[in-house]
Length: 181
Image (cartoon, rainbow, N blue to C red; front, side):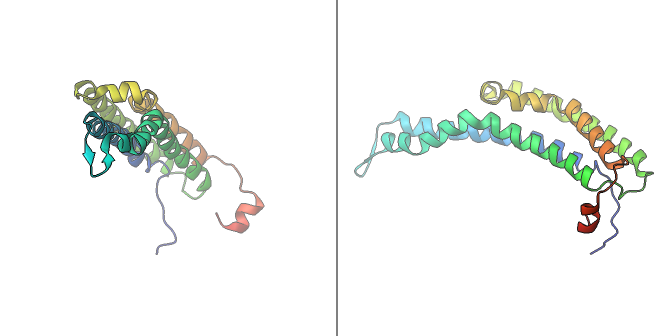
């Protein structure tokens, strides 16, 4: 393992941008799919052996579906916000480990990440307006969808904060030097 690794503090921004869009799309499909399964199972009043399928579904899978629909927005926002917060904390932890010349490369990476975020945000907007279950994204997950629609702005701000934290001259305290962060 190489112990003297050099890299960029905002390089993870590409992963976060793509993961943010993927998390929200997969989350919406999951909510829609589970909702369709529960509606299909509860619409027919059929018996499987001695068990009423509608009642069993409402007592088990119906409770999970209700919890997912009520909290899907929160799950998406927490995952995306956590990734951006982790990137900023990582930038703070690795401060003073990069040569200052990499600041220029980080700016170029940030600009390129912004362009990718604009592209993915526009593609997401086009996708949620054309799919048949767009009400999941606008009704059930409005904050998470707004987060992805504003992804270029958010990624630019988070990347700039990470660059500032990475290249700032915040001195390390004695505990950090002893622990070897």
